[in-house]
Image (cartoon, rainbow over the protein chains, first blue to last red):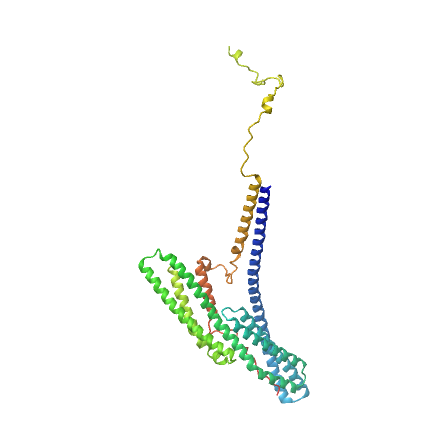
Amino acid sequence: MMKRLFFLLILLVGGLLFVSTTNFVQETNVMAQSAILQKENLEAELIKLNDTYRGQLSEYRLAERNFLIARDQYNQLQTLASINEVVESARTVMSLRNQVLITYLDLLRINLIAAEGVEISLKQLVLERLETQRKWLQAHQQALAATSDREQFNRLSDTFIDQTENLIAVSQQTVSLLSLGKLQNVFDRLVLFNQSLVIEEASVSGKQAGSNIALTERALRETERLNQSLATLLQTNWSNLDVGLKEDSISGFYGNLSKALDPIYTDLNKLVAFLQERLGQL
Amino acid sequence: MIENKVNLNQTQFSVEEPILAQPVTIDEQLVTADLPIAKKSRFSKWWWLGGALLLIAIIIIIIIWRMPHDNTPVNEETSPISNEQILSPLGQRLETTKKLLKTADPTVQELSFPPLNLELRID
């Protein structure tokens, strides 16, 4: 009787262990797969948006040319037919311009969501601003569709001109975040890579001669120095960008973007070369 | 002389006697006597069965546990057959980071504001 009970107990424990492990593994698989799927979806969406953006931009260019011709005719002829022509072409070109901008903002949004190396709070702040501008463009688009009068079109043009500053600002904020985020992401990866390399070097150092160990230590010191310098440079730029974003005055940072980030890019290339050299010595 | 000693009939068995020629007698004492019983094993079949099932369950768990690790190389850079394949894992990591660095050049800006006429007016 006791033996049967023991057997049943083993069966029960084994079964429970099996079921719980299977569930855990399935959950882990689902999580990993969903992360991969999410990334793939973002990439697919980016490709699609890029195509749409290019197509809309070429359509806009054509519409803009037609509008300019219609406006010249209207200015010369001042006929009812030419007024009608210019109003319709204005509707088309303004609508296409809004569409291009909506797609552009979507591109920025997806790129920002997919970006690594950007602090979540800053990402969230800019994503909200992108959404606000997108909503404004959609409302403007609806107003354009409902307008038929030449004067109303001019008023809508004026409101758009007033809004352009905000549109450009949010674009500059996103581009600045993405640019610095890319460099930060590379730096983070290199720091982790360096840690792995140090472990690998330590395991190999037992077999090395004294002179080689001194060489490795010197290389490590140089890498650490460069790491420190890069960390400081990145920190300074993040602080400047943070101020620019929170005070909504990004133009100064954006205007200086290439100049400010170039030293980081150069140092990162140098760091990669150092690490590659050390890897080659293993 | 030889023919008399050797039986040349090959169909005849060497030990041949009629079945039940003599009645079988059963020894009553042997039947009633306590025969030595084979000693029972310490581990009954239930123990063995339980142990085997537990072992199978553990093996299946180990196999399932290892499965996701085999699938993990679905990496962001599943590049086609290239030099990376002959690189060490560390070398591959560095190559991936180098590619990312190339796309991070601050002098190349792919997402700048679109070239649009922002001041379109009829009049």
